[in-house]
Image (cartoon, rainbow, N blue to C red; front, side, top):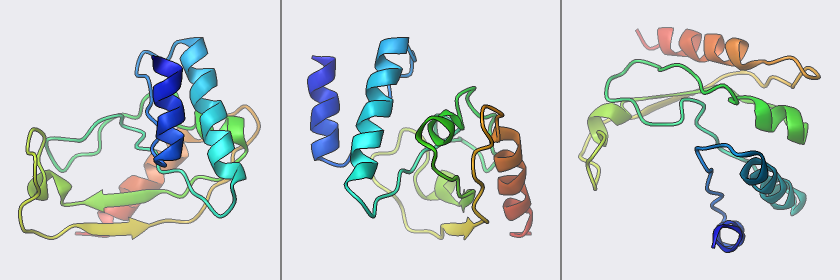
Length: 132
């Protein structure tokens, strides 16, 4: 029961995304995110690549990478998370010992209906460049 799992997700503070992005599922997920944010002092964490990388490379962003920011009227904070491909590679159940570095960029606000995904990706790549 899809709606029930979304409701449970809100109770657990986890909001699952249906990767098929059917209009109904997208509306339901956006509504769940809006309800979550209305509870105050909360943030959403979204991974615009849609999956973990098997390498240190930043993959392409999914087409709706900034849709949540636009539809919910919330800012995006670009974040570069480096080292997770070594500490917890795809397929591994538990992390191994290692270093993960997190770099946080400056906040970007949505600009009407214009996508900011390219700018967010560019800023994440710039943050990653600071690791060298």
